[in-house]
Image 1 (cartoon, rainbow, N blue to C red):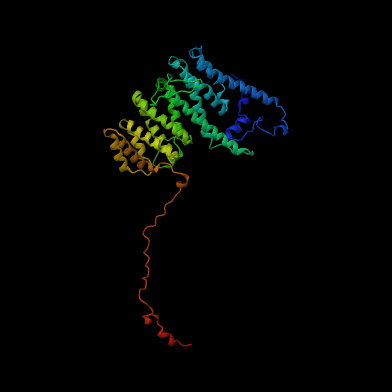
Image 2 (cartoon, rainbow, N blue to C red):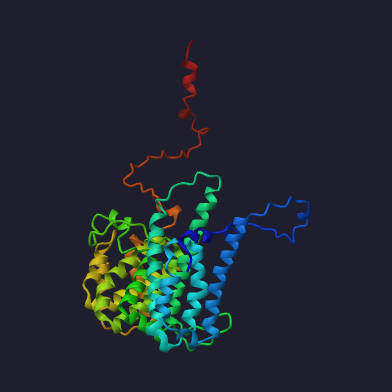
Length: 426
């Protein structure tokens, strides 16, 4: 636990900034001209900051290694979860993204992977709930403020903006990877000294994943994170507000998490949650089904021009519609209010989904192609195709082309009126 006056020490260092920006940093040992360069004056303040930062990161590394080396003795410590909230998470709001990323990588992930099942309810789930709630709030606020951020006046303004954009994208992707690990990673898998773990091949929910989705607070945080990752922020985006026929609960306009890779990761998580809630918690599933469908449709609008995103999103949309359509009429209402929708095709698709035909690969492929045709009006396009206007010329007047003369004018001299030239007088 650090005194509030020292929190500025943990801001990003120049070396870390240059490393993230990919600048070529020549070390003193490899620089042949180092002996000719003037040595910089030693800065005591910088040395103190570096010492505190090294101690901070060292403590995180010790905690992460203790999860593996001490095992159950580490998790059995008294009041572990409350101590975590009072120390590491006490000043989390003042920490920059780079330090939160270090906490998640060096401590939270090893702590999650090496925890045995008997400490799930007492230690792991309370700590995960505390960290997930902080991350969901942090990412939501940051993504909301990105379009409203002020321009940098200094000469390094472009680098600062690039660094901020890079950090929030990396943090979002790693956060969604953490949720995936908590849902699908088995504690029975083989772990190495570096904390790596093998995931379940069929990507089913692990014992921890089932407990998290059965816990009300954890389920709320995980579903909220998936909706945000799918380009959703418990609101409705500008795209749907521009559609005059589409109004959903009068939600305000807030910018989504615009990152294609995060959307791809959240699409995978949505499929896992849909399968589980349809069996375990039907009431919650019926409540969030319209929101999940709208979130997938919004993600199609923002990232549909990426081939890697469009396929999984269409499969997830079809999975949500097939799973919840028979018990929730709102899903059909959502599709009816889409722009450029063909109602006849939609009705045929709905009847096909409602029928009890046996599912196979050919049927699913046909449904996916039909759904793609239905959603053609809201699937995003590349920037070069966004404002493309097709030229259509209809009912043009006919152009009368004169017939080509086929007679030999030399043989028919009368047609040239040569005889009349002699009658012309000045």
